[in-house]
Image (cartoon, rainbow, N blue to C red; front, side):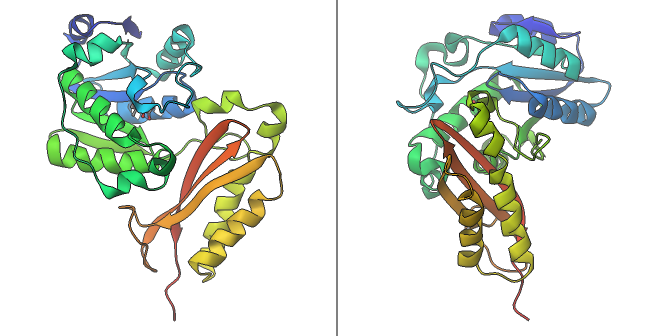
Length: 283
Ligand code: PAF
């Protein structure tokens, strides 16, 4: 049975008596099967004596001025259903005051990699994500926290931050859950019109094509061009970036697994995706 709680003291009370192995699954709500996969992974990791807390907080600070904070889907009853069927113990929906009490400042070290990929069009986004995640960690004090690989850049920064500032918390990364046609599950998929949804599979198709070409020895430019070619099959999709980097988001050298990452817009909806990629070493 999943308990829905709001304030921080209500959360502490609900956690009392539940398992001592605490798993946090941070989310912004609008829960779907991708979040259920995170909850399952967390449950499995903490075992019988574990307690899985799903945070449900649309963090205002990580949205830019022209982004979708106001219209971001919110439906706590539906979230409770998903959390319950995935077996979470607690769904915690705090207020802004619970997460940012008294607005005490928090130092987040910046990094030039905050400005690449997502950071190019979302200035301040990653500092805000790291701040909110640190605050959620401080309140819940989990043993592990679970994040999806779909937000790969975010996952890299959170893993590095946890290693440095919260080494007692393990970070569990879960592979992207996909729809029947390969589209990565995302809370923003609900914004797509049916025409847009019908062609959205071109995003994962393009990444797969890039991965295939890499395995055949194509170079970075040839891979990026092939991704663009697949996406150009529909004029409803516009690529914002395609990049191929190593797992620390630096230059990828052949022979080591890295990531191919994409952001694309369908109308006003911006979707991201990524897949592991291996550039072939020259023989
Ligand atoms: O990935 C998300 O849903 C958010 O960025 C997170 C990690 C919950 C922080 O608000």
